[in-house]
Length: 359
Image (tube, rainbow, N blue to C red):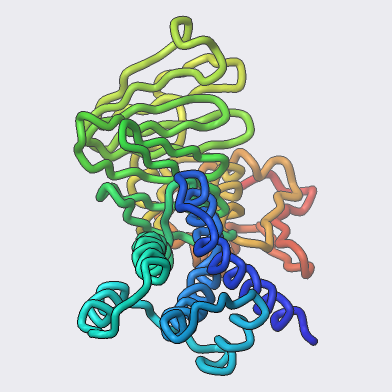
């Protein structure tokens, strides 16, 4: 038996056990919470429960004898097939029961309404999981991008988040507060206006609070850089107690960085022009050292560029480049007299003959 089959049978057995538990016990708040938590672990849990629920729903009035878990699993697989997903419509089930003229015993009637209550809980879970499958979001979700990958996500509150290469973002949307944690990498936030629910982004070095604004956050090991494209944000250092935290308010066109010691440095970070263009896969440089250009491109590619000749690192570069087009950048470098571009398999080397000064 392969691993997938074993896992499916395990989930089916757990679903059947829940059917039995929910019929034998009162639907206390604790039991409902435990049941919903099990459902929300995976869409497969909901699918199996719905399949087995149909079997139970079709047989519950035929006999007062109770099914055990093994019988329910076997019956569900026989009736529906191992890969079928059977949607349960509790309203239809209740209407059908109401139209039935055959009288039911009090015990069966109690089980019928208990089953309807359980079905309602399942519908709530199905709705939540369907939302997860379609939009890729739930509270306390983790979003990661690979090297070179960019994603655009719409949150449940209407805010839009663009996530750059090699990044990790954690989302926790609550009634009173919208919290996001940028563990690493870069993201741009277009915040939906909701004055009653602050929008807060945390990084290892800082917290950024915004209401109705567009801003960019880049979290690196040594610092967090914040740039505002529209509106305003309040930037605070992360580690100090709330009353002692240094802070700065940034308006559109302004930027700042927070380093590992909590120091806030105004007008620091990538240029606003580059910040504004990365979502279009454009990297803009204006008289910036080659070392900066190479470092930026290396964020987007698994084959790194290495500067073999130290004198080249300070060469000033201006231009707009496609972050996904590494070959065009290498062709640009090769136009410089005496600059050698070499591929050695796992990296790309830029160098100058020792007798030549930098261009």
